[in-house]
Length: 280
Image 1: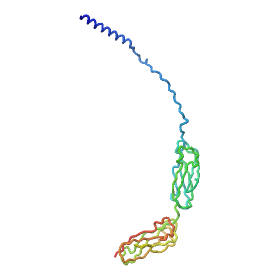
Image 2: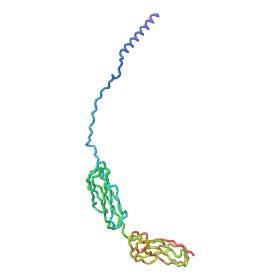
Image 3: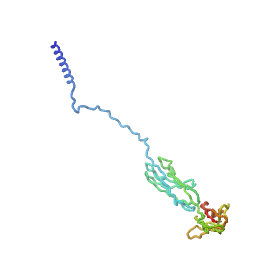
Image 4: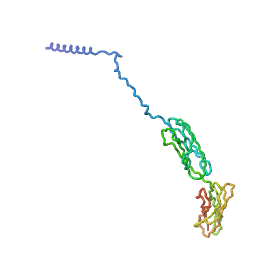
């Protein structure tokens, strides 16, 4: 019995060894460099349609507007200066820019040469301002639409300015009371200095002084001519004598051009108030 068992085990070991030998024979060693990649099909580059790519264009615009003098007066010649810039990516062709002042229908035209990207050209116009008032200056790049631009809605820029009239401007300054500390029944002298801070002398006008609750200023005299105030000019005053039997505080108001006889730059600086105290 034991001999049969030993024989069976021997046979099984021989069969297993033979199977491993056959399997090992089927495995071949691969030398380095023998493996090859599978060839891929060559890719053909796609053709780019350049006909539909947008080409760079110019873009003309107005950078800034300068006005000189900055506060012009009636009758002066005013200089308007503007800068035209090419903000695009391509050069512009030669063109014309326009400057329109006030209510003009058509702008005055000025030549602008061909501009490279970021190049700037300055144009200038002089205009005699015959009247006073509020005005607008408008500057237009490519006024005739000769340049093919990437933007067509940024070609203009405007600036408002005011032309002053040449006028006098009457004012009242330095109110004074004499005596400085008045008492009841004193004769009080009230005075103030008249100034003309305008451009030209003024014609005739009247002055007045109102005290306390008076409804209208009392006529304090007239002036036939008042030069523009300088350190050397003659000083005029508005004056009134007054006394009261009632102590207390009083508001005194001095007026120049009480009847609005003079056309002035400013009609709201023709009076000044002063408070005085009358003691018992």
